[in-house]
Picture 1 (cartoon, rainbow, N blue to C red):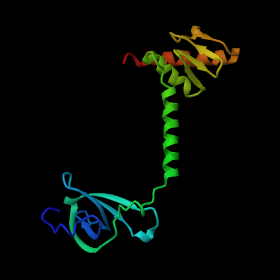
Picture 2 (picture 1 turned 135 degrees about the vertical axis):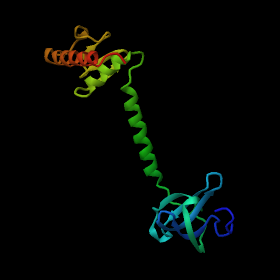
Picture 3 (picture 1 turned 180 degrees about the vertical axis):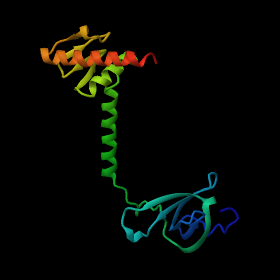
Picture 4 (picture 1 turned 180 degrees about the horizontal axis):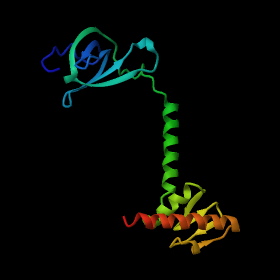
Length: 178
C-alpha cells in the first residue's frame, strides 16, 4: 500500500482487488490503519440493504487492485444503519447471562466446595446462600460439605443430595490434589 497513489486508496473509494490467496473482493474502503497496514473494506453495494459484510485485510495480501469509483462517505451517520434495539437486546441478554454465571460462583468457599456445587448443579437446581449450598430450595449443605452436613428437605431429597455429595467427594479424592 505504501508508495501507491494516495488518492486511489482514500476512504470512500470502491475497489476491486485480488489477494495473494486468490480471493476476489469488491468493496468500499471504510478505513486504513497505517501502523498495522490493515484495510477495512465494506463489501457489497448500498443497494444490498442495511446489512453489509465488513472485511479486515492486511494490505500485504493484496496482489493487485482496480480503482472503480469514488463513492459517498461510508461513515456518514445519517446513512448508517444500526439496529439499536437488537444491540440493546444482546446487551441485556449478555448481562443476564453474566449475572447467572456470577451467582454460581461461591464467595469465600474452597475450590473443593465449588467443585461439589458444580457437580450438584449438573443434576439438581442449586444456589449459594453465603457459604451454604441450597439444593431444590429446601436441602442445605454446610461446610465441610460431607453427607452428614446435609439438613432439611424431604427424606427422599435429602437422601438424593447425600448420594450425589458422597459420589462427588469420592471422585474428587480419586482425582487427587490439584
